[in-house]
Image 1 (cartoon, rainbow, N blue to C red):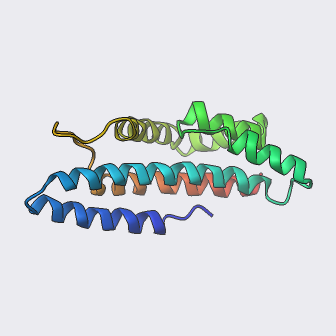
Image 2: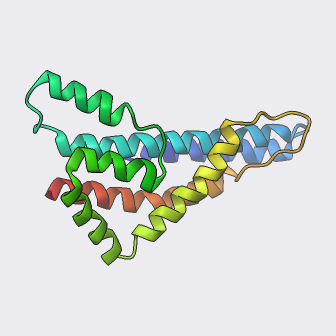
Image 3: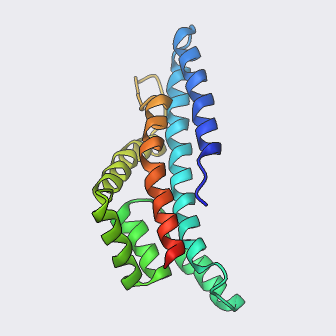
Length: 169
């Protein structure tokens, strides 16, 4: 099951620290909390996507050799969370192209595929900025932890639904 309680708790803690930092004498700490919230959230997205693929193959792979192929070549070779480039490709390799087509048709039928793609693209921009820059004397900003928490509220139900659809395949 895709679980949100841990990341939600983390983001709420970071939001409190962020708000306290804004009121303090060193508001640059607020930037650190924002950056950390983005990075933690993106890590959660990647792990959730891996979990979805793992759930499908759970109990279906019978040999250690093929479990290692799955772990290393499918899960281990997926570095990112863009929908088309990472998630779709990983899922095609894990569940097959026909099942992936069924999953996408379902997401389209409930008007969630574009929402998923847009949310992942939006957070990817923030993530890349957070992961590939450092906070110096230059003013740098990232979405506040509360914004990231709101993104979780949009993305989590979609990932939970994908997980539930995978169980049915």
